[in-house]
Length: 457
Image 1 (cartoon, one colour):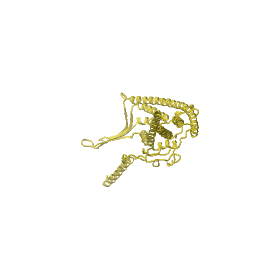
Image 2: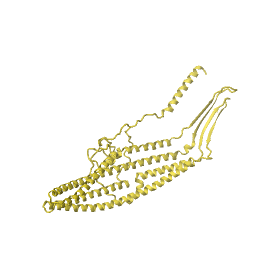
Image 3: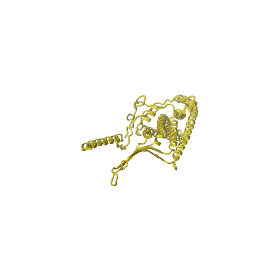
Image 4: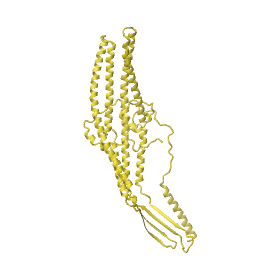
């Protein structure tokens, strides 16, 4: 080979090497820093939140319905945003399961140092793991089922966050109504205490007449303080669900709840097809079943097929197949098979337990709702009677036919009846909201934030 030919061959060899190196590194991932947040990122008000619902964008200046508040919590809850990373992990596992192992390339070179030979020797081999190909389909199917399971579980978590936000907003509306009644009662008792004290100072009443009024006033103040504290804590929990600062406040529209379905039997029977948590468990069971299939296939001896060839120092060139077979004397993948079977049995039992609990909870909530509806009807009738007596007493008091203390008792009774109605309405509304979620009604069937990226660092 001439010097010029050797130089040309060297240049081509270098270019080929550079090209191969570029192809090998072109698909490699690169590192980018992802720094942690240095401070809290709580929104000061509604306008700073993500307000784009699937149907329309919320106007923060208007009172929000409890359904709007529930959907806003799904879009903005920081804890839920952190949970969504589980789906990325599951997708990464699916990608890993979908990739076959790389072929193994081997090369050896023996430089001739001394001896009767005339050439240096070399060997080369190319092989592939056949076992990974045999288990490819069930492994990918298991990983794909886990992605679906995580996605369904995230939808269930979104439902739960929406339910918590709706319940808190509903509670706040009821607490405000109860606080208004208790403040009226406190004002009434304060006025009565002042009147009794004036009469006592004038000598027309005994000092003992003030004692029951003071006790009632103390009880009213305690009840008012308790409700105001409950409202403050409810606001803090709702702000946390929405990603708002604890001091943020906004107007809540009067809740309007639809009555529960008259016939629950078909809804309970179809729970496995509608409740995301049950769908997640079913997909998880499917993934465990596919994992068991892959483990059973992997019990057969590990097999690596390929070819090898080379040249020895006497210029003898050889080539042929290469087989590597694991002898299953000790490990027949029995550990992985046992673990996969146990996991499948566990998920089967968990699904049965969740299905029974879901059906039982729906029936229990429906029974509670019927009882509370009957109690509320009776309480409203009692309130109407107390209001009628109060109106009659007010007319008699205005005509001078009734003393102030008796008139105040009628008013106190009417306020107590009104407060009882508010409490029963709250209990009934909470049961109806919880029953709707238990039956899988009234909430989005797909995730609101599917495909969105978290903008936070």
